[in-house]
Length: 322
Ligand code: NDP
Image (cartoon, rainbow, N blue to C red; front, side, top):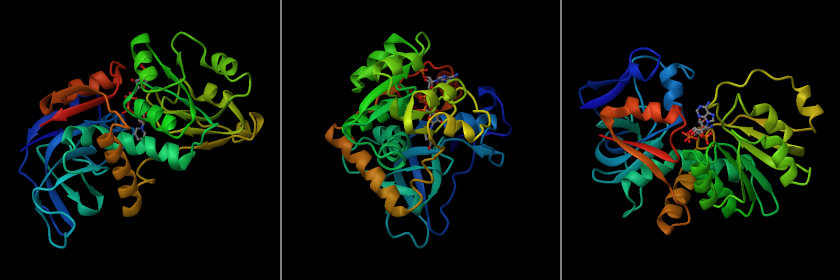
């Protein structure tokens, strides 16, 4: 089988397209034939070593496909079942082995590419809006990189819960997609000072919550656009790592809350994983949630997918097809 592997950390050129023996499922594991693997910013963090994993490593933390075989003790899945997963690495391959506890069923009739495109980023939008800062009508949510893979889903999830949404993005083309996703206001943060504009839009009050995945270049102003006792949810660092901060800053800027969550801690139990994944798949099936697939590339072109994602050229999801 084929797999996208790294033997050292570095740029997209370290991604190798290699032949490996197909894995076999052990006890409690399931062998999945991958139909589509989702590309996520975490793949870049793995490749550059920001999140260090043992090497060599097969990349890809999200995929959907069909069960080929199950290991001993697996009762929930059978060969032929459509399934998806996010978390365990190894999705950028023809086959991968996934612990049954991390696998979720894909409803009959839902396209496997859509399932791969929506699972990780959809569950991220879900936990951010339902659990980290549960949104209600009357709340104003501020979303950075709103045209991104997570961003477009986050805007839709926030609107579904009745919040007013202010989104940021870099170009007018992307801004149009953010508006179509339902955002009330869009700020081109590459051209307009988003702090001044948000204060103007909120009559000086500030917003209830900022969902910030951009990190280094936005963090400080993200604190400044919050209302008193608002929450900054820092959930990524697409522009680079945020430097350490003094806790007194949170006091000085209005008794603010700061959290740095990950989807893996919000899908840690089987119950929570099935709750979030089934909500996402149901919303896709009913059309309540739309996922935009920006590029679909052959698995052999994983390096190109990484280049596109890190150079800000994409809006929505990137998929790799084995
Ligand atoms: P995106 O599709 O959002 O791509 C990143 C976007 O960030 C770019 O398109 C760009 O949008 C914006 N951006 C701003 N500055 C930069 C920069 N210097 N370099 C690159 N991009 C920049 O990616 P994903 O949807 O895969 O992920 C979004 C973020 O969410 C990532 O930081 C990721 O780590 C995080 N994440 C966190 C999770 C968690 O559990 N905590 C789970 C999933 C994702 P624009 O052109 O509009 O500025």
